Length: 66
Image (tube, rainbow, N blue to C red):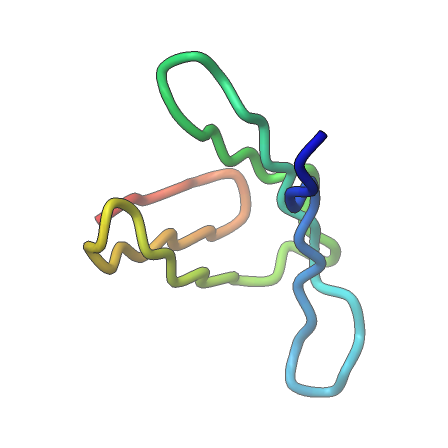
């Protein structure tokens, strides 16, 4: 069985935990889901999908994928 990342812990600049991202391997690809964001912090996650850099911006409950 191959090893793969299931969760990403996001930290703010002070080193405090800002939130979590869960990674689910699905038949049609990989699904990322914000588990929760502490203190409604604004989060930005840079991803590389199929060789293309994408940015996932998380502001409260709003998620923008560009």
